[in-house]
Amino acid sequence: MDLMKLMMSDYKVEMINDGMQEFYVEFNGPKESLYQGGVWKIRVELPDAYPYKSPSIGFVNKIYHPNVDEMSGSVCLDVINQTWSPMFGKPSALLLFINGHFLLLYPNASDPLNGEAAALMMRDHTTYDQRVKEYCEKYAKPEDIGAKPEEKSSDEELSEDDYNSDDDQVAGKADP
Image (cartoon, rainbow, N blue to C red; front, side):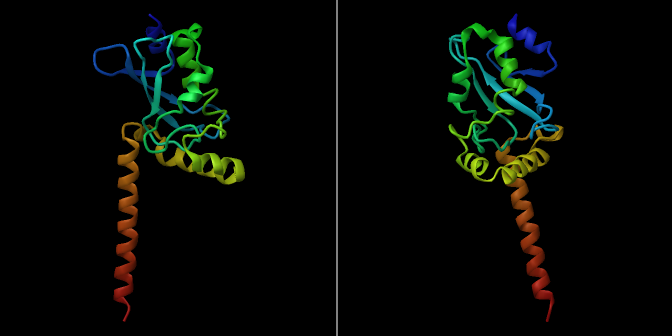
């Protein structure tokens, strides 16, 4: 019943397999945040001991955030567990997380999974903000949420490098 409330919310929920313990949720970046304009897809896995044990949550599309592993999309367990309480119940706890009020609006650089993002956030907030926005533009458009972060970034990096290096080499050889 609680999962049904989540499914009836403004978020797009897609079940994985036939069970009710694994699903994807799509949501928009919070308004007035660095992530505004981005569309995010997360994978949620509810453990057998749920709601007494926190869910496992990971981003499907690539995100630049100190509490999210850039390659796997895993969200720092400490961040989830610090705010987790079984009294929240499924819809309110998951909606709180998905809404991004504590993760996307309030990144915690003191407990990072992405050390580079945390360090940049602490020493050069302007560059950090710029990097977050670049990732939003590159990886968080509606058409991006179906691609795994590794696949998309590898393809783009490979194609950019191939085109740039080939063009430079051809141009260099063409001049006598």
